[in-house]
Image (cartoon, rainbow, N blue to C red):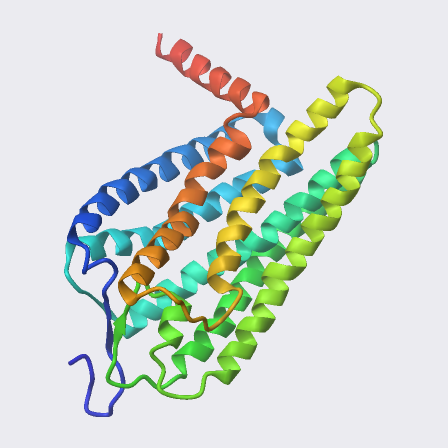
Length: 319
C-alpha cells in the first residue's frame, strides 16, 4: 500500500489522535476556533499598520512581518490538522507531505530569526534613542526583515532536500498531525547522521544565534532602563519590551522542546507520548500565533488608537 513497483514511497498516513476519538472532537473545535482567531487578530493588525501612517515605523514593520508569518505558518499546517481530525487515517502524497513540511519549517525558521531582529530594534530604540531614526532607517530594517525570510527559506530547502533523499521502508505511518520533520526522519530505513548534523547546524543558526542576540540585547536594555531616573520612564521602557520578551519565551520554549534534539526517547508509554506531542504541537503551531497579536500589539496604545481611528472613519463614511 502506498508504494510503486520501484519501491518508491508515494504517500504517508497521518495518525494524529486517531486512538483518542473524543480528544479528536475537542481538538477539532479548539484548533478551528484558534485558527479563526489567528486570521482575525493578525489580519486586523496588518490592516491597521498599513492603514495608519503613524505606525509606519521599524517596530511595526517587523510586527507586520510577524503577523504575516503567523498567518502563513498556520495556513500551511492547520487545514491538514483539521482534516486529520475528521478521518481515522489521513493519506498525504509524498510530494504534498514534503511541500507542507518545507513551508512549515521555513516559516518557523524565519520567525526565529525575525524575533532576533526585533530584539535588535528594541535595543537601538532604548539604548540609543536619539540615534534611532538614523540607525533604523528604511535601508536598514527592510534588509533585516528580508534577511530573516531568506535565511528561513534557505534553511528549509536544505532540510527538506536532505529528507527527500532518504529511503523509506514499508512503514509510512506518521504519528503526528502533520508532516513534521522529526516524525519523517523516524521512518527512514537508512543512516540519518547527515540529517542529524544538518539539524544541529540549523539549530545553531536559527535558534541559538538569534536567542543569543536576544539575550545580549536584553542585558543592555535592562541595564539602560535601570539607569533611567524617573519611575514613569522605566515603566514605559519596560512595557515596550515586555510583550516581545513574552512572545520570545513562549515561542522559543516550545520550539526548543521540539527541535533541540533531532532524535529523542521518551520514558512515557506510546499512548501518553502521542498526547504529549499533540499538546506541544498545538502550543507551538496554533496557540503562539494566536497569542502574538494580543500580547505584542493589540494591547499597544498606538494600535488601539489606530483601530479606533480606522473604525471611526469607516462609520463616518457610511453615514
